Image (cartoon, rainbow, N blue to C red; front, side):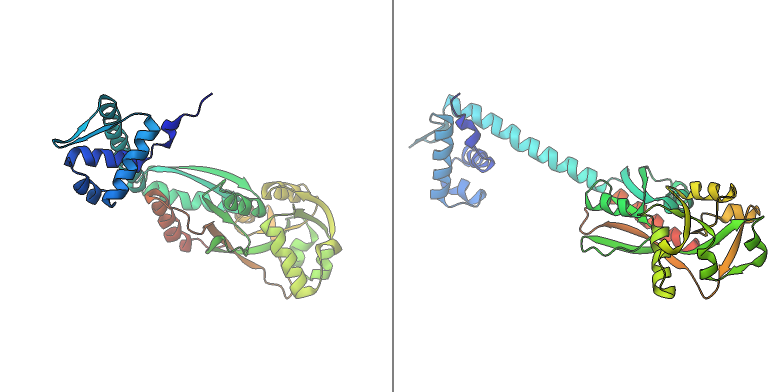
Length: 311
């Protein structure tokens, strides 16, 4: 198959031809396309070589098009019109209030924080459709880094130069036990005593687990491996069900156990000399090309978040 030299035709060559036809002068056309007259002449020669025939007649009477030149000129006008239409369409997309947003959120924010924030989005009557995927915190971070999601919510801080992290909501981690558990009456426990209790933990990658492990290490010099871990669960709801079934006790977000505490199904137990607090974070890539609907969404989230407080 022979090489298709038409592929060598450039947009600058097409624009040069249009200007040449519309001005009838190499000098005037060169000024319009910001080229020297010699450069414009070279552009026309290169295009004629690509087409394989003369496109422009140059004579004492001025500039005229050959039949082939007329065909190329007509298509050049269509190409430049399409470019302007594309520009207008892009500007419309950038400025429209509606659109889709792809969100990745770790378990606790997705289940207990986002629903409260999104009701404010609904009240604002914005035409925004959210696509929310729930993963653990490590996976949320990777989804943002890999452009699989545009905005993320997670329960632990991460250090990455490609990511912007904003503190969104303050949270407390709470030791919770079933209402019939002996610790429910005792009301407090040392970390050493807790380590001997049957303990249910979230899976590796969970923000809740990561924060608890940091607190253990920094304040008590202990590791989770020292605990009597009876099972690992892939979600907060699974951990709560395991506690209610009598499998053990666990550390969970105060947001996650608010309903069960109010209903008396679970009881909070303080840990001696231990305050467990963290933040939920809003994350996104640096230099992400936010459109108008992204900005509206973030504005509602940032405005609504301070009203939320851990129970």
